[in-house]
Length: 349
Image (tube, rainbow, N blue to C red; front, side, top):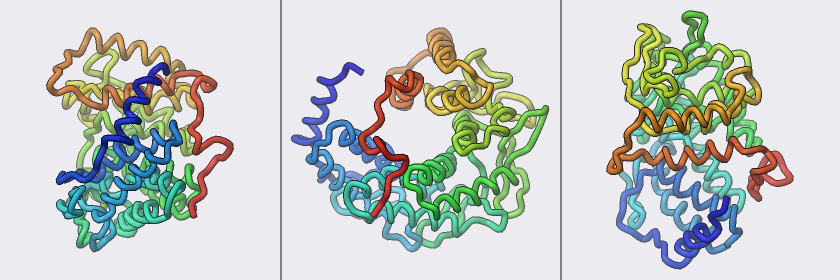
């Protein structure tokens, strides 16, 4: 993409200057998907063994977080001492680290993927009789502290990475978990209204509907259904498209039961709109057809409808907005990572 010099500068910094030996409490979920994932991407691009060594060092400093009564990691871990804190985490924080840990295990040792998978299985084992997990859980006792079930923020990436892990590694156990999990979601969370399909929030134990509010972060779900081969539901699953706060931008929150916008602001977080949702949909379902046109309309809306505050800019705008530009290029313009060339799935161990 024309940033070779800048990429080399960052690579040299990681190899020559970066040290993880700092008295810092790191949020395990965030640094796993961003720092660990970023380091693995750098190794993918460079093949530099010193980058891989830094990646292993970082991952080893996260492992003490998994030494809990359930195997679900704590909220944070000190990178120098290994001391942990935060015994209550949400489901996304608990079980959304299989792809990065799996790729690291592909290159090194099985222990990283094993830790992530154990956390996933701990969540699945504690699902309700309806097959649903809650939102928040105590990592030591395994007790649910929030029994709401949803696909919303706090749970969303749990479902997303279940399917992607199965596809990436061919792990049949994770594939079974995905099949059971998505069946429960479609059975108990989905409901039709005005000929549209919505995924609300329910109590995990009895399925009682607790909220009809959906958020911008739920917009990943139709794309996930398409990726898993379900193209029927996404054609009527119009999350956040009707009654927008802005003609081209979704509101942060919308109550489909009351048909009203609950939060009309738009945080600069395009990943869930154009980096995740439209690309698979425009390739496999009738709406939307033109991903590039969506990107152009989105950019126009930002210019006319948003004011950026430099002191509180959303990092997703840069990180995930770039995903959209990459994904909307032609297939022959985007080279596959080395780890995926010539094979559909990675084999671990």
